[in-house]
Length: 337
Ligand code: PMP
Image 1 (cartoon, rainbow, N blue to C red):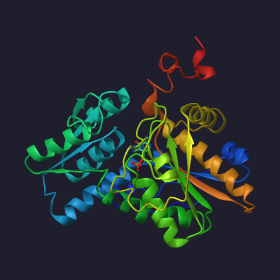
Image 2 (tube, helix red, strand yellow):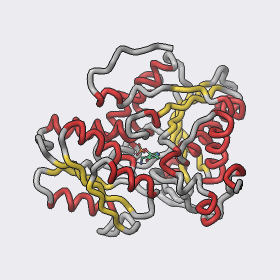
Image 3 (cartoon, rainbow, N blue to C red):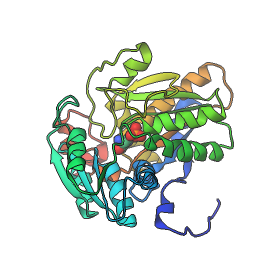
């Protein structure tokens, strides 16, 4: 275990997250499955990286000036990352969020000092969608920038320069495959590009939840979705600028039940409390590992992202009544009186 020297600044706490071998998923896949612990970022999610990358980029271009405001539409985690980075750099934050996201994320945003605007969930084509609402608010606010995480490629650049480079170093230049789900697509595209730059034989797979259109797009070129998912932060219906040119070799579609089984097992057997996108990612990594092993590869190593902490979903994924209301299986320990 390496102990690092003190960091000079709190923003340096973003990134350089630990990578951990996951025993249960590795046994299930018959190879080594590694999880990148993005819940260890100060905002407890992978989105701190995009938040910092986007804000630094806007400062460098001169768009964001001293005392300015950062406005963003988000499922929550990007907003939490932006609020923390903005606090550290002296900016204000305005966050627009669909009102069907977890209560914990809304409470957290308010606690961090962000101005929170909630809107009813609606289709992207609707002008009242949270993304369009946030763009308008940014236009109407003096000294504000619109972070625009979906189509601002400073997002994926944070993963090319950060996440991919770290994974490569942590696995000492030997990684057979990487997979994760897409929200903005910044993580899958950025890590994919960064790893392919170093080893073109590293297989990059998209893991898509139900209700998203990318599985079908990468399989047969058609943006089409099937089913639904309760996973927050993932599930994309279009090719965002971050996804353009993403080097996706193959794809898996993973249901909520399979993702939930993995978050239950990771909690009970390995002591990690995670959100559902992490469970879906781990299920995708197991599928990928099995496939690479079946192809006859030796000593296979697959990495994925553990996107955020489960503490953000105590009122949903870890709540028996909520699970029942969504017709999902209840973890047996939650049934206790
Ligand atoms: N998981 C969670 C919990 C998220 O909040 C997000 C971000 N929306 C993702 C996964 C997906 O990350 P990205 O936006 O980089 O595709």
